[in-house]
Image (cartoon, rainbow, N blue to C red; front, side, top):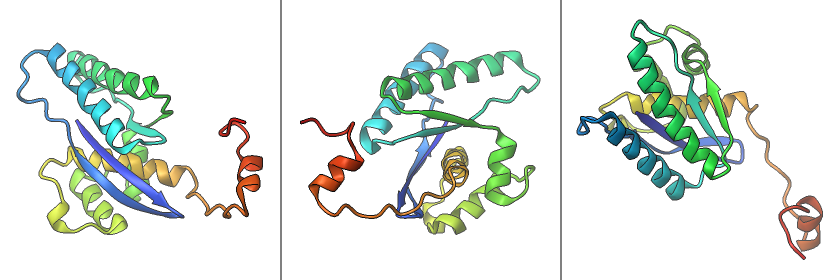
Length: 170
């Protein structure tokens, strides 16, 4: 299970982290779900994301695989929701199209394009491309949100309070 974290500084996205939640050592599906919960919580607590983007599951030929994937995603989503982090799902085709311009792009093509877009070195390219899949969902979300604009700075404390009434207690 891959993940990627990006930070948008001004209007420029930068990769903060990417990796995988390695589930290979767990034989029991329920232990895998617990590990997903622990790792997603740890990632959220480490990076304090504002939003979460995930790849929507797609139906293959194996119903059991689809069920297990749905449970795994449900655990990750529940962790995010427990921290009031909004979630957006993107179809795999949409993510590939946003990154490469080709909805049928391979994992390698997506990874290569992300490396170019986010300017990270070949040395930072992960062994498992599930990590770049997670990063691709984050970057797709950035693109879909309309590339945020730089907000004008605050003139003073009163200006900050006036623009953020729900964030300041009196």
